[in-house]
Image (cartoon, rainbow, N blue to C red):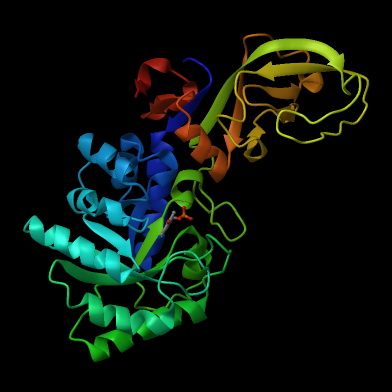
Length: 371
Ligand SMILES: *Cc1c(COP(=O)(O)O)cnc(C)c1O
């Protein structure tokens, strides 16, 4: 394997998906597996599908197209609201899109009709997180107008929480979603097939049995990929947190002072770093940097190693406590949180290796699939 790279254990992703799908199924909820943090990686999507997710959801059209081109067969949901300039591609690529703007729905409808199609949509409701979604007092009007559009079919109502403002999903906002759905169905001859209430932040509510019965859909990314719920980033029972491991190589290993010499100015990123004087330390430079990862969002698996800082192309590590075992050319492994995963998956400088089969843990390389 070349470095830097990201190892992806597809079996662990499949296992995590199975755990989450079983929990959701026990509460009458179907799961769409969210692949956006992996840039729509087809192997990851397939692992999620083996684990039982009913659909794949991604925020970007290019990612959905990438999975379709790789012959991933499932229903594809577009999570990010469509741009007016993209409606044709949305109709061609996504089976369902999330929407909150009448003008966009009108364009989607026209584009669908032009192709002799009907496009499914889920209307998004903002229940306070202040990202996408129509405000509740305008929902009924939006439904009334959207219903007139012959090229779209309103399949459901959804809300997204704990993303932009960190609003907790709870019984109250979930009940509100259910109540609004009932109100819509009373006014219109319309049955909302899906009430999509939660992402990975809703698992606690679900496990506590506090989810209203009518909520029957969830869009889950992080809990499947990284094995965590997202209200406090607690590990989720019976999931792996290490399906993804980042690896970079030691390209300089030298004893140097722990504090810089000379007068101080800004560093490469306009900061004034402060270092504690601990005398000379063994400093390792690795071949990965801020261009490829979120430096605050990775942790060395070897607890003897400490990240000192990073520039665009290097991470500096204090390896003093691992002096006996570290060497030039050695690979150092890191766990990642969501933002590091997102960045590493997006960086074309970080090679991705997906493993399937129990050989992964033994590091046997012929099980490697390159892509
Ligand atoms: C990203 C996203 C999700 C998935 O969120 P996770 O916290 O990763 O489970 C769900 N819904 C929408 C609309 C999203 O954009």
